Length: 493
Image 1 (cartoon, rainbow, N blue to C red):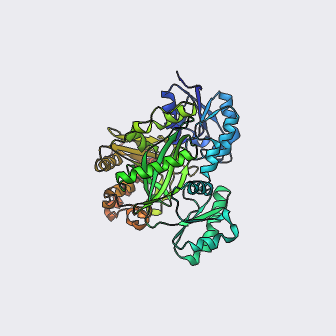
Image 2: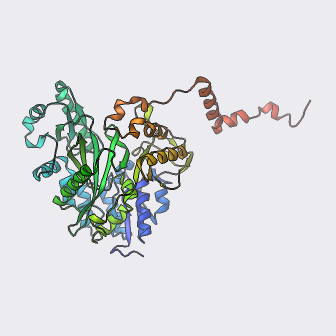
Image 3: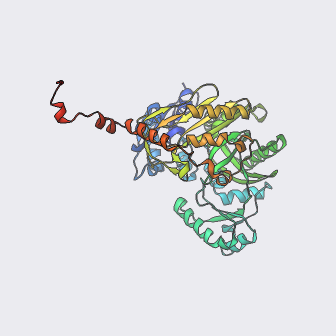
């Protein structure tokens, strides 16, 4: 039985994050309701939820973005709270207002905080005005007529970003100032296409930067704490692949400085619930990048080293409770690494792949956690993001965590759809990764990591034969007896 003021939680999401939220909610005694599109039929989250409410849309993504359907489902099922997970409506201030307006608790920050910190331009101005470090920049909203001129005056290299962006979409690195105009035009076009907002800003690009983010949590009573940092520098196309904590780049003094800065930014914003303050770091300096006003994909590594269930904390804060811990109560133990399992071909430019999940075997054991949103019998399509699962390992130190990650990857089997599992093994086995010598452009600078290893011609033929004989249609054809011979029955000469 739940001790919270609501007894039913609706999860407005899908895949592994929906299942992860359901597990914590049920442990807390909450009844769980999941909205689900037809494209997610057979998903593990559907089977785990106490109730599934079908939602419809022109596409699966459109269905999960339909505020009216989701709130109607919550009201119809008696849900007292809605957890948006990440992606979809999780950083939509209009959705947060609509949820609160319907008398339902929104498991996240206030709509005002999303408005402020979710807009990259407003957030940067807010942070800079309060004395926190931001990279030299030019913001289009300040004076659209002089935007390009002000951007050029910063000097290269530059990073062009949509104001409403996320997930790396629309971002452009400009090293040749002669190309600035066309790169700005391209970024504006992509911003309008992905976010319906073509406003831009430009900032000085730090060469070979590291991406450091800090997990913060606040309650409605004014308490804000940080739960340490995560390093997310291993990326492709500005999207994260590997996250770890603690960062191998920071010493104790730098760690305290960047984490306290993040907590200070959150306090200044009157922030509550879970959020992540992100920074660009290089050569001892760091600059505010953005704030994600939601739970992050990589939150499990923080849970692993602190022992704090962030979803449970989110739910308790949304219910009006005070944080059960102060800054001095939070301890980080050991090292944790998260590897994102994608349906994609690293060798073909990280192109998304599709196919049936014919067999799925997940690794397990001490210090190994897998958050997966797929099951055998499902089909991987292009309807949603290609992330299939997250492998999280925890060990006493970074060297042991890398060894545990490699062992878990070797035990991770997913047949029927090409994944990046072999690529991830090559990545964590690389000496530069082992030394912690990575940056956001590291993968681009080392394309050999993404390339498939060479296979000898005779082995390639053997593997092709095995694959063919493992296919039912080929086996049936090989085992078939011609009609003329079948008519002879058991006769032998």
